[in-house]
Image 1 (tube, rainbow, N blue to C red):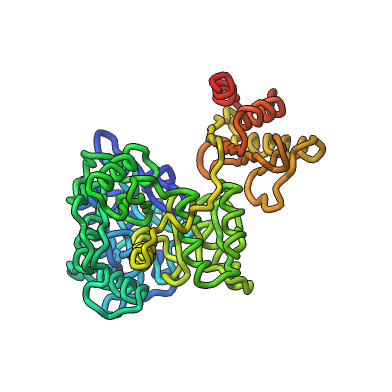
Image 2 (image 1 turned 45 degrees about the vertical axis):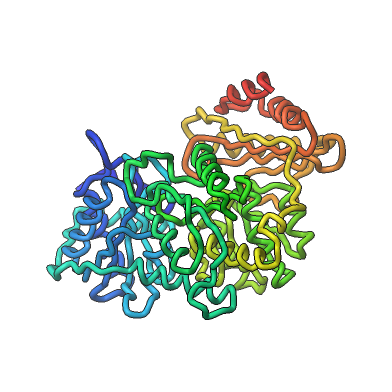
Length: 501
């Protein structure tokens, strides 16, 4: 059976169009991949594997969950389905007493459009890596018979258990055993019609006022806005809701709740660098000297902020699995590293098994918001000294060469060679992905850019930040001059950017 399943691979997930004519992610494909996951577990020495499945609110979720569950069962697994769930909950089910399956599958495509869907896989060790997914897809494409089971598929509820775990984290965070520790706090929840609408009820159970919360009902067509903390329309929507309700803060999740952002009482967004700064401050206030791992595109102002709070900022490659794995490695090497976080909102705390869980992150911050309110303060007080860039931009340069990775690497090497002797160009000491250049504009290192190769696409993403007006255009012009003539690199978007600045 050759199904062309490689085209559905996206990092460590299966993802693709699941609705419409010729959609590649069909029920049959989901069943085949589910069976392959079970076969892979058996190859890893798991006898009689137990597998749990859940889904988000997408219109194709129920169909794909049922098909994948059937495939798992026919491949010899004992199968439990949890219905509507979140991605982090599907991992927590593996390590929760009374549940404890050997593997789990979450049917989700995160923040992508309604016609997309996908599969995320977990074992008790965490999310599978890219090589693991390769092995699963090899089995799925191999024509090997995946049969051997007929046990009944059991429907269970896990989401209420996950809710209780979050409630307990609130009581621990506030050092209390009272039933309603959030009395007096007003939080607006925006679930974007994804899987996270239950969070408003969770907060209400803890005493919080949730008047003004919106889009809590699951609706896989996402009729109000894209459930994505990085989407401008989504952030404007939750910001307006918080201001209208007069709330203390607002929280917003992506569809499967592994990412989140918040807004303050004035509707100001706290995402990207601000979100990283906020959770870093919360952690460093309790224990200075910590190492905070982020992805590569975080700002110089954030690095300064973390240093001033007594921590060390450690930039690493983009990709939430990359930052999580590096944080784990640093801990094993003896560094005290409690947090791995991407600017996209993926955040994993050591206290929570280094699971990227946006809902857990928000819960920690809500505890801090409650504590601060009792002192007459608010969350934004913690990041009042965060220096933000005067200008910033992201430009994605298309690579036209057939071997796009080789062409991209050559372009990056060209920039590094130039930076080695060019006045005012400094290769960043923490350069761990592509090439990050600290730039002298009006002063020393008051601008920077990062040019890197996209993980999956024939693209060179370029991020630029400047602490002085006009600096972004100046750096873009300087980079254009270096890359002009680079084989296989389309500089059209960079040229257009320069001309419009």
